[in-house]
Structure formats: structure tokens, C-alpha cells
Amino acid sequence: MSSAPPTLADVVAVLEDLYPPSTAEGWDAVGLVAGDPAAPVRKVAFAVDPVAAVVTEALAWGADLLVTHHPLFLRPVHGVAATTFKGAVVHRLLTAGCGLYVAHTNADAAPRGVADALADLVGITDRRPLVAGEDERPEDAERGIGRVGRLAEPMTLRAFAEHVAEVLPPVAQGVRVAGDLDATVTTAAVVGGSGDSLFDAVRAAAVDVYVTADLRHHPASELRERAEFEASGVANRSAGTPFLVDVAHFASEWPWLAYAARDLSARLGEGTVTTKVSSLGTDPWDARVASPGR
Image 1 (cartoon, rainbow, N blue to C red):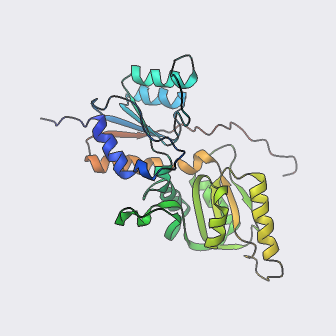
Image 2: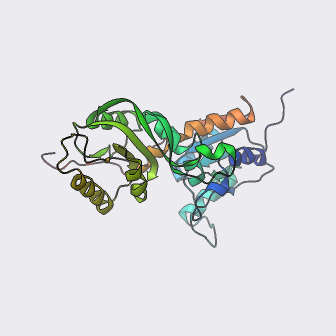
Image 3: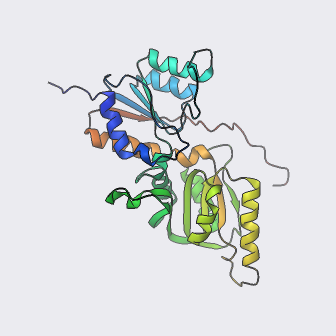
């Protein structure tokens, strides 16, 4: 006889051990958004964004639980009527008997979380958190925002950016680069999602290149101006660091989904649940038109 499937409460307990809610940023909204803790869970879908197309995909597959990185509700709401686009998502999930769970900044910082998945894909070794978390347990030494370390081998900034573009999901934006494309890079830092608030930590880490998303004009411009000013007179093509590699927000976080799916299955026991990583691209941009002459 086959054993009974885990309940939603069982699955949530595993997710919250992997990604403790207490490690999320204070402004964040993580945890169980919808679903009956007593309901059985046989299929778990993973996606970056809880958007309508992702819900359609998950329900067509027969998911009992949808785990997303980004919250559906980041700010308090007073209702979830199906007359709103977010309320309609909740109604569709509940009508189909599918729960919704969010692991956001707690998944960013976790071992084998968003930062580690991105660092693995980019090729960073001998790494540590860019910003260490608070050590609540011995295993929390690996917990923190971003990752910093050495590249598997030195390469030019151009080759590194091309590698990043090759290993991440294809998006309209592609990859933007700031710095001397012929300079050699040997060390790197990564932060999944929006990362220009961490420029001070990146400078303190003294890395050659920083990979993140959503870089704004003024912070990026000031970082590069300062780097070039401080490197003036230095006869070294790698001076003027850190260089910047700006990727799409969605693309930087999508690699974590496979880690989450594998780790949940391993904790529950192989074969206990079936997992699926969404193949939908939920980056909001549809196309890019290059400037003439570029």
C-alpha cells in the first residue's frame, strides 16, 4: 500500500526549515498565502512570479501547491474580490484546490537559495555571503545576501558577460555591461534581483565584477565614475573596478527554482511529491530595439 501524501502543513514545514521566515527582510511578505493546511499535496509547481499565466500553467498540470519567489501581496489589502487581477489569482487557486506559498528574501539569503544558484551558474568558487546574515544556528554561517568569490578561471569582462548571457534564461533585455571589455576579471559578486543598494558592500569586497539586476542610472553612474577616478594613473587594464553586469530581474532569480524543487523533494523523500519548475518567462519586457549604430 502506498503511504498517504504529505499535507500542505507538512510541505510548509519543510519549506520554512529550508527558508526560515525569520530571515526575511522586515518589509517582506513571505509564507503561506492561500490553502488549507490539512489538504494533501502530491504536485508542487515552482515559479518566480505569481502571475495569471503561471497560475494557468500550474492548474493545467494539476498542482496542489504553487511556490513562488515573488509575493502576490507585498502590501496589506482589505479584500481579495475576483474583480481585481490579484483577487482573481487567489480565487482561481482556491477553486482548483491549489495553495500558494511565497519564499522571497528568506530564499535570497539561504544556503542553496537564490544567491547560491546564481553563483553556481556564473561560476563562482570559494565563496562567502556578500553581506553575512545573523548567525542564529551553526549552519547559518552560509546564510546572507549575495555571494562573493573567485571565478573558476580568469577571463575578459567581455567573455564573462557572454558567459552570463549564455547560462541565464533568454530575455529581451539581454545583458548590459559597464567597464573595459578587454580587462581581465578573476573575482565576482552576485546578487539576485535588485542589487544597486549593495554597492558599498561590493566595493568593500574589492571584486572585479558585480552581477545583479535592475541597476539604476544614477547609482551605476556614480559607482563607475568613482572607480575610474580612483584608478586614474594606474597602469592596469583591470583597474577601475568593480565592473558591472546588469541582467534581468527574472533571469537572475529563475535558477533557484530547480534547487528549491530538488531540496523539497529530498526533504520529503524522493517520490513523495512530484515537482515542476515553470518554463514560462515572466520578465515583463517583450522586445528590445537597439539604437541605430550600436
